[in-house]
Length: 364
Image 1: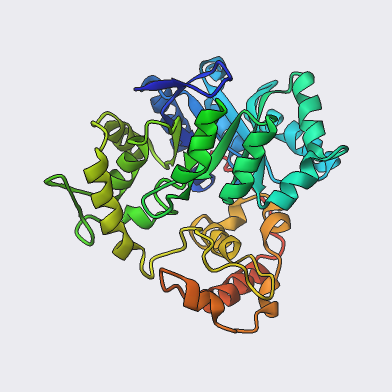
Image 2: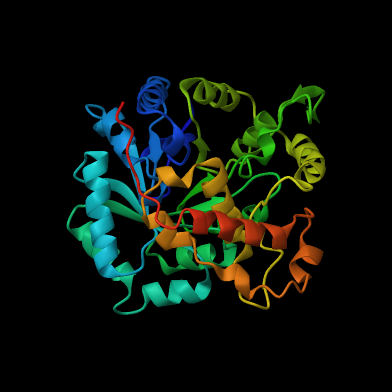
């Protein structure tokens, strides 16, 4: 396993990190098996968030091995009381006294960055929590590249989470160079483009440098081939999936020509398959956050939002789709020909059916 110093933190981290998102629908025993196998294989970067509903499973699995890992958490709340309460719950669930990194989760815009960083803004609370020793470093996650670059320039965040894969490459021209220039860490999220690259090889194999590769292998190797990516997060559901990604990480990096081949063959893969969170559909004249709806569709349909805490609803399930006038601008703009209007209606219908989701951790 290859290791990096994470920005200027002094933390040494594995280039493959374990994301906690998929653990929400993974049985507790399997989560423990995957985490122990990850540590045995040399992975030491573990990420989760209150929103995911998996912190209890991760904390139980890390019991007795906490000091061997770098543990990152995220908070999507934006009021002081909610942030402090969320952190307290995360620490309790994760069975630790501190988090190595605590992220402002899902920074949406430069305007929001200005708001949270202003005098009296919540970033000051994060810095106070750091002084108290409850968190060691402050990070930020998001899908807006300009906002992430702005966050780096403030000097108040030590690392950023940004999406990066063969279908979402804007970070390579903006966030990643800024992170290197400012000696900050960069963690790649959405390496498999929300599952788009997990297509079975018999349906879409990648021909790269004379090799035939599964989509997931091609995409993950593409991400790791960028030498300025410190960590590539992987959402796994089993020890076997994790072992496959570790095997990919041991392969030689793609050269420029091979990477270009992956990109060229990815374009057709994205057609009609799913949202890459590229944001080309925006701005919506009605103010609808369209990429957010597609993320929430994943939560509801693929990750069983009924297994999530009630805060899932608070964060995402706002019925904005009734504002849609069906003007068609988003459909015209979408490079992947997605049924956007139909998706907005579907997500609101699913969310209404699950109006008050409650979280029950698995008894096993």
